Length: 228
Image (tube, rainbow, N blue to C red):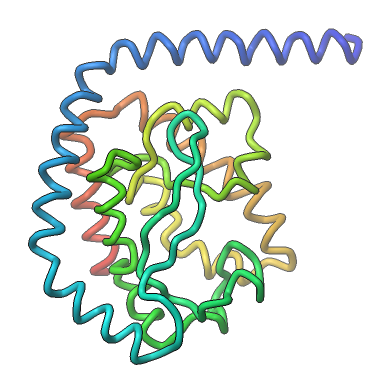
């Protein structure tokens, strides 16, 4: 088989996968509607309930290191649209200029308060704001930075057809990702070639199962993983 034939075959396979995905999303139309309803009510309740704890967390962040309370990083959302994610800042304010866009092991850029916030996943809670305004969902593929999304294949870009989420099954499975990357001689390459493709595949499977009840199940799984 010639190189041109191989390329045509790959394009046909990706086109077929795209067509199948269009059909899947049509079937999920009602599930997506109820998923959004859940997101609105749950995020609104969560922000009201956490308003006072957020104030104390903000004070702790400001007292421990210089810089803003929130970390606003550009991520890629549904249909490739860029948005800025809300997270409690867990690193020194100029962290991105001092290293990679992924964290590896005991990253020296992480503050003392940040270490606790990351371990408990509390740093992710401000993303309830992103959920409420419609940029994210409670459950869905974690939003990547543009740099990594540029490496997606056409098939992998199907994962951008739904809203990204605060949590996902892939994050639960790879909850020790930082430690895994710390053992690699080339963490960036390991993430791109090994971890990222597996996460995307897990998220593609999530889309097939996606509904409110499955989302609630994954939310409880996330709590269980954090408490371990």
